[in-house]
Length: 138
Length: 146
Image (tube, rainbow over all chains, first blue to last red; front, side, top):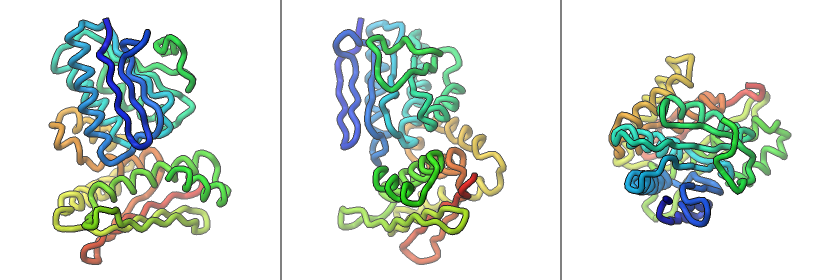
């Protein structure tokens, strides 16, 4: 089972969903701080959430290792996603993979943990995405 | 924008953590100015300045505002007042994220989280000057060794 392929291209970032052998992965790269990025991410994450519920996925992976920088819109959108998961009493878990060498990611992920105690897994890896992106250490 | 800030921080001899903090604060302040400022021509009209004053860095962002910016200015003043009253910017950041979690999406779009992030993540003291009608100036200061 996998997510429907989606692609969100902004001026400075590219976010892809599904595709290839990484059907449960949301992969982001670039810089996420345009004024409307929060709204666009919330919309995208709502679609991914709906797709995960519909297809009965056990896990959705969000890989932000190649995001050089993100404004607060990313964290707000992820927090809203966790709220959606809680409201829908979903069974899938959300794995967010970051790059610990990016200080802003480490700080943001530590804050994110408070909102997804049971369903959120924070994982760390290097910026180069491996073939299996969920293989980073927790 | 981050490249331009990096060129300046390189020229100023900033350590990497300070350069990162300055880039983050710049991004948040400019994003706020673009989102909530008045830009009647359709093009953002924002003045940005980064300078070093002895042992501290000062970022100043100035932009026009309109009557529609009143709610944003009210939130801006509230967040800065709460930062001043608190000795734990991280706790305030977590509190605002909890508001995002519990609120509706429209409310979540404007929480002043960026201003608190500048203080929490970047170690800046933030103040706001809107004494000149139609203009708001946000100033963020950070000690070199903060």
